[in-house]
Length: 175
Image 1 (cartoon, one colour):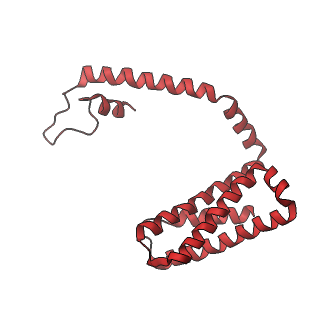
Image 2 (image 1 turned 30 degrees about the vertical axis):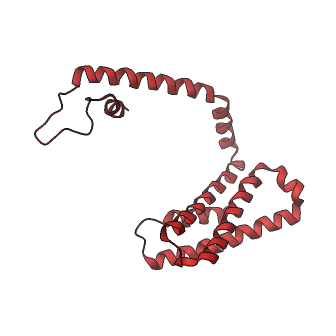
Image 3 (image 1 turned 30 degrees about the horizontal axis):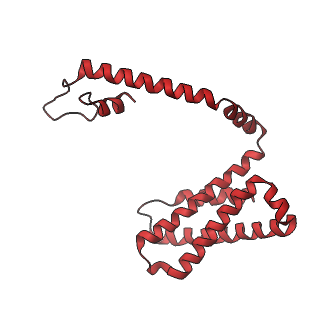
């Protein structure tokens, strides 16, 4: 199943704007196969473990959510078909990206990754203070840049995007 999750992630990453119709059709077939594989996996787990043990593992919540969204996508596309609005169809296709979250199941097998995530979870309060400190520095240097460089970036070919004429543009420039 780990291999199927990796292959599904690769197939999802191939999709892009302006894709050829042939490639899109192949990707749709692959996504249908992966959806069926994941539905089968969930069904076998539910039958083998039972609902109580299935729900005891939190990663199964993620897997179940992804499978339910995939089932919803299959039902919706079967009912509406490709004759529905293009924007509605592309909105439903966004649900496929939730399958990428199944990569999180690989973290269970990597002991070093669990250690790193544990350290990050224990030190998240420090990240908040570091972020606040960075915001204070951006604020200070934006004001300083406005005082020193405000109105001075007026060239013959126009004003550059990164200037210090207003606080909002200065903050983006400093960031």
